[in-house]
Length: 387
Ligand SMILES: *Cc1c(COP(=O)(O)O)cnc(C)c1O
Image (cartoon, rainbow, N blue to C red; front, side, top):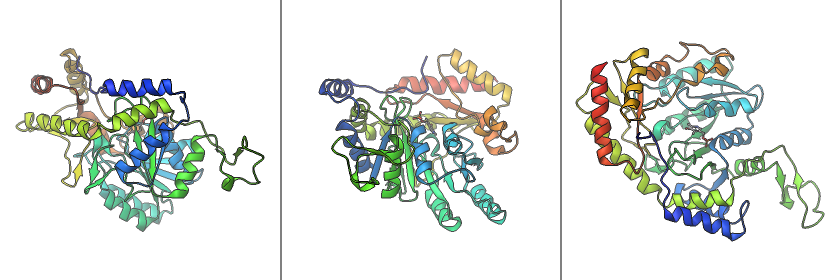
């Protein structure tokens, strides 16, 4: 079976982990700040806060922006549930902005219309979380313009998009957002086993996120309410969590980061092969990538435009029976039972729902061979012709 994604771990990664295990520092050692600095330099951003998952990063990002009960946060329905759950953790209300069928990203027209309506109804969002679906940045210039006009914060969920760029700037530079979040889950672009990071150019947000990732506890005299009792002393000055990354994970991340550009280049080369393979099939539509974006191609998704709910399922099952582990990204978040219990229903975000019925995620990872890609192209065409 060819999986839809797979991590790439080489001898250098293994050596990095082993030498950290032997170093005496397992948890909060010198490698975390090294990894944070390397990631900040790579992205051209001032502050990086490494954590144990992108889910944690999204949560502390919301906390840093002061998201709380009574606030509303908007995100894309075409994402993993974590993009929305982070607002619920803060007791805020979640709403969604429908997507653009061609890219799978939040639709800018829909966002603009929804903002204009929300302004009239006095229910503007405190924050919007655009998701860079499959590795392609959303139109951040447009979002940042709207953020200024309607006064909301922007958190980029760039879980798919480390190594991507937008208008020649690396995703993660936060030129158009308050905070940007990456995931280092093994299925994503680079891995720390489990892990994530929140990036920002705002020192106050970074400080709040550092506190939130570690129990709300500080050893910094400047943050304390009274002078230190001695070298052992710390204070808890806010409520935080244990969301820390550890040194072993950071060592793997540091080693993986060195290969990031090669991974993304290889992912782009594979995407090109797929696009060429499907170029003459008008009922197979790969997602469109704008000319101002360089995608990290976390996923390669096609829309099989002739499919129904039933044939869509048959196609995925047949592909898997042929050894191609096709997948579907994503089940619209608003149709998950947890969210329908909150009042969302079928028909609320029709583009995301149409998209869900047509999308097929094909295997894409750095070590997939050109032969495997050709086999997948051939199998997909054959299976789709049969339905
Ligand atoms: C994977 C993913 C997350 C969660 O990442 P974790 O590191 O597993 O917590 C959040 N948002 C999106 C869009 C993702 O794909």
